[in-house]
Amino acid sequence: MGAQRFRGDHSPDGKQGEHHIEAAKPLKIRRREKPGGFALTLMFLAPFPLLLDGFSKITEASPLGAATAFGTFALFVLAAWTLREGIKAEAAYNERKIARPPMFPRKIIASGLSGAAVMLAAWFGWGQNMFTAIGLGGLATAAHLVAFGVDPLRRKGLVGFNEYETDRMARAVEKAEAIIEDIESAANRINNRSIERKVAGLLTSVKEMLRVVEQDPRDLSSARKYMGVYLSSARDATVKFAELNERSRNTVKQEEYLSLINDLETSFNGQRELMLADNQSDLDVEIEVLQERLQNEGHLARD
Amino acid sequence: MSGKTIQRIAYWVLLALIWTVAAGSYGWIA
Image (cartoon, rainbow over all chains, first blue to last red; front, side):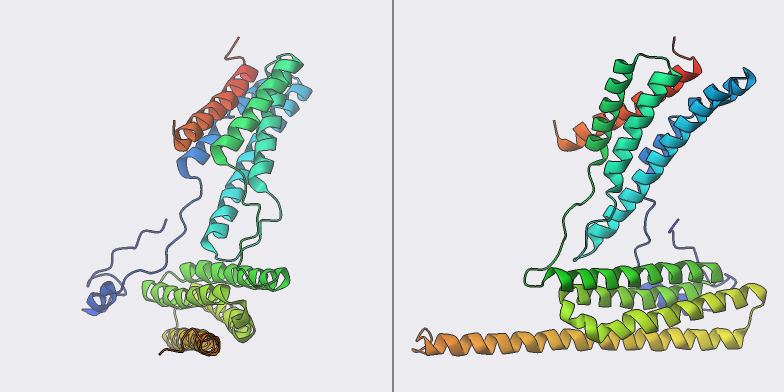
């Protein structure tokens, strides 16, 4: 997972003394934790007796019984997997300032799947009567809903911007975040700490820019080039460099790649500053207009 | 009882249910 690896003077790619400067920088990128953790792992493990049941049905030469057992087990796994996706989507939703509700309410679907699986297992596997099975299934669905909650169902956005603008921006931000993930995974493949750190620095700048765009959708048009073209070229370059690096280490290409990442980081930071300055001048205008109005209405006449 | 406690209880109820029906299917529970 996301632990920062130790890097000292004697580490393979650590130049003498260099790490003292780099260590002073705070690690800004928060690596995503595995969603759900141990609680979710148990959800995957709990139905495993059904697997044993499936195999024993095979030895008893009961194909229908085996199919039922394996099918129910698969349904439990599908439910747990859907739940994990739902927890991931919810974390992404919470991280954003502006977000659309997920297209599929995954946690709610997972509740339904769990309930159905419990019902099927109780009815056909365990051999309880239909009413008991339905009761247990209903109980499982309810417990699932209480334990894991429901998906965020409402649009999270800014007052004063219409649905179209908010949607357009949420889509653009989602796309950019998908590219960021691609870059992260490609950079991890390179397996070189100084490159990983450089890329992490660039991605921090990109993420900060996304947050600025989210605060003011009007910035989207000026940021679009950065979030689209530049970011995808960064991804393509990173993927190509990772592939090249897997075959052979090439210091010249590495220098070129690092300088590209540097340039991109500088320009992302520049663009973000520009957008913030722009917002500030908007505020100045608003204050001026308001002051003038107050003056005209006599509230500031005594000044 | 806090919301967190209720959530925890619901989680264990769910887990127990899943385990019980699975174990029942295998014949561990008569």
